[in-house]
Image 1 (cartoon, rainbow over the protein chains, first blue to last red):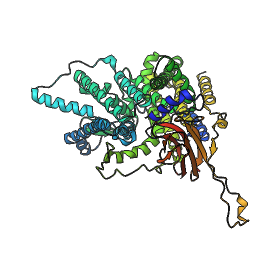
Image 2: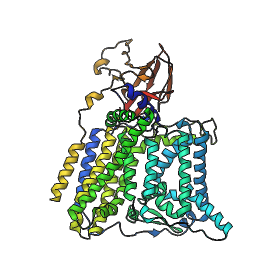
Image 3: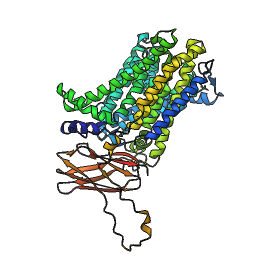
Image 4: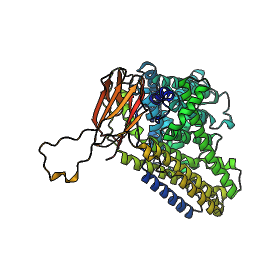
Length: 476
Length: 142
């Protein structure tokens, strides 16, 4: 999505010693948000501080979210939604969309904004499905093309062989969610650092490679073990879906206390890495719009050029390095929280605390995505309606919507700022509630729990302030 | 003790993260696109044919495919008329994103943009061929 900006950097960096401009987010769009004004920033930070201390003062004695509160909805609705025909239709839609992305990417126009593939993958899928998951639950599971296709193949093979298949290998426990963390980081690299990441062809090829790897892994470890732990997007959307009050269990759909799904998250290895990638990549995308990055990147690029990289590779190198450093910083900061808790309240090793509290970062990750990509989704997301009519950009008009254009009037700058700050504040409060709740369980003693949370509070405030900072310095 | 510690961390982060004003001077727009505001008392004197104020035009010069002096920012308030002139020593297609305006520049014949700033945000002006950003238009709420 940064192609125009990258090209500008690559050609411009060598010529201009001064005046290098921050790359506008999403070259796909060529527009960026106005920075959140300082007064909004200052008020938001004050509100965060007040809310945080109120949170500590009213710290409850018994966990409120840890109890499994799931109750099946009155039978009927759930049964219909989870029925086999609905499952097959949803799976078929997912597989078809995967096919359209690959076909449009390979056969359609090379102009990113004129082709279905980049906008569908980067905007509708990666961003649009996030709020859908957080509100309605794990919708992606039903539409997951890799799961649906693999189940279809397994069903046919079982019929043909007359016996059920067993996965050749058991999923290695120590792998945990690490493959998902690696997958998400790889896609983030392509999107934010790769020089050709927003080209339709790149999107199609990446989709083909990822599909191949996913199906290979499913063939080895079985569909379900890979979907729940290894498949990057399943893990990504499932984490957000745990915020939702809706959850499917077996053939039932039930309601639960919002956020309580996060308390049920299995503490597998690699989960902290997944969250660090999720928060780190959005942070980097924000940083890449800031004057700070505009100052750093020419020097970084020069450094990579001096190592013998071509100008294009040098830009990729500096963006890739920035992305990696940001992910590691997010991890390091969270690790600091675990170490601090261990130091203040003792009782456990920091490594365990790190895993035990990681679910509290999910609302923060949601806030980062929601605030940073709000306008991308609201504006660029609209283009999927005309791209659907003309997926290849060759003048087709399948649904009669090809002539539409983006209505930039749907949200103004002032409303955007309020929503952005609002998302960040709500995410902060949700994270605090989850962490407090978990502390009560971990320490079993309100006094110790409170002590542990002084530190966690500082870490949460750090994350929230970083989010606000990135929103207020973008393009400043 | 922990309270003090948390307090120190929080206050520290507050101080660190509070944006300073030091950058503001350097961020002044290269050229203001806004027209001079009419004087409030102007109503009393009735001028039958008011001479329109000289419209301010932001000029960007492209040489060898990149903007001279780097990418310039142009700041306008919503509703104002933005005038932008992009001259180039080579034929170029110049595109303003979101507003989706394309103009052509050739040696001695600059691309002339004149439009009402109705969409808020920050927008790239780029050379369509090489995808080089040559200016940015920032439209703030009025």
